[in-house]
Each structure stands twice: as C-alpha cells, then as structure tokens.
Length: 199
Image 1: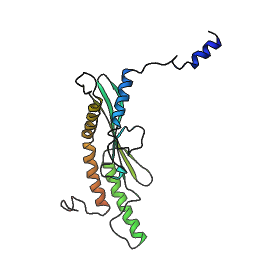
Image 2: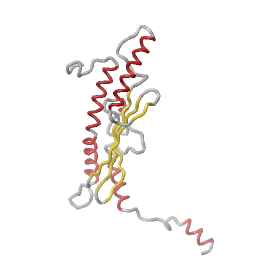
Image 3: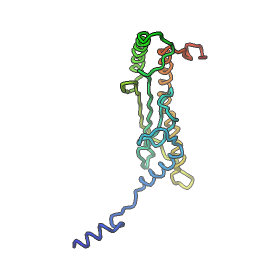
Image 4: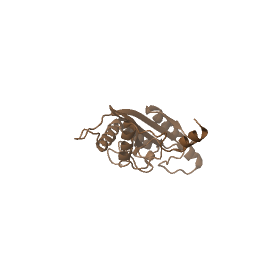
C-alpha cells in the first residue's frame, strides 16, 4: 500500500466507522430516559439519576442516586449510591456557653458521642478533618419491561430502576434516621423520640 493510499484511508471518515452494538443503543436510550428523573443535584459523573435535592448530604437520609452501569439481554445493572455528611467540628450545639472553655468541653463531649454513633452505624465512611462522610452502594439487576410491540420499554424500565433503588435504600434510610435522632440529642436538642413525638 502506498503512502498516499494509507493517507487517504486515514482521512476517510467512514473507513473505520462501526455500527453501535444493540447494547450501546439500549444504553443510550436508558440514559436519555434517566435525565427525566434526575434532579441534577449530585455533580458526580457516576450518578445518572439523583433522587434528592440540593445539599441533601446534610439531610437526615443524605444524598441518594442511581448509576446505570450496563445492560444486556437479561436487563439493566444499576448501582444505588447514598452519602451523608455528619457534623463534627462545625456542629451547632443547642446551648449557649459563657466561655470558650465551656464551649470546647461541650464540643469534645459531642465529638466523643458522635464518634460512637458513627462507628455503630454499620456503613463505611471517613473523617474529613471537620466532619464525617458516610456512604453506601448496592448493585441491583432490574429486568427489562417489554412493550406491546415486543421492544424494550425504556421509560418504564428506568421507572422500575428508580422504584428498585428506593426499596433498596429503605434500610439505609432507617439507619440514618436513627443516627440523626441520636446526633441531635448529642448536640443538646430535644429529639422527636425524647419529646414523645413533638419537638
């Protein structure tokens, strides 16, 4: 092959073009449907559907989102992600203190109790230097929804992915609510449990 022929082959945009696979076409369609569910509030490239709002990592149940990992003839593989920031050095304590020494003593007491709570939560995490960040992920296989024409129903399949993620996160939600109540009590606030249902 001459240099000119090789050069022309290189410049030909269709020379090395390959048709996308069925899995790639399906994945693109799923990602388009995913945008309709995405709140856009978790700017992490792995998250295709954020299920929570702005600054949700500070909410009782934290940030929650779905990563669409892959798809094949069996269905869609998703990974559910959740993350929560737990106040540390920047915690807002309920009481007012007359001196810095009193405040530091109260802060140290809170941090000691909060450390025990975080360690007992059963989820991985790390101390950032100011607070804790607790996180969780879980992989799920969601079957395809087949439309009347026997084609994949991408919209309903993604809707089922969201429902499956919500079910998978119930245990996380329950653990975070218990921890949030205990952390509020550690910071000196009357909790819903301690107040008999009314704060």
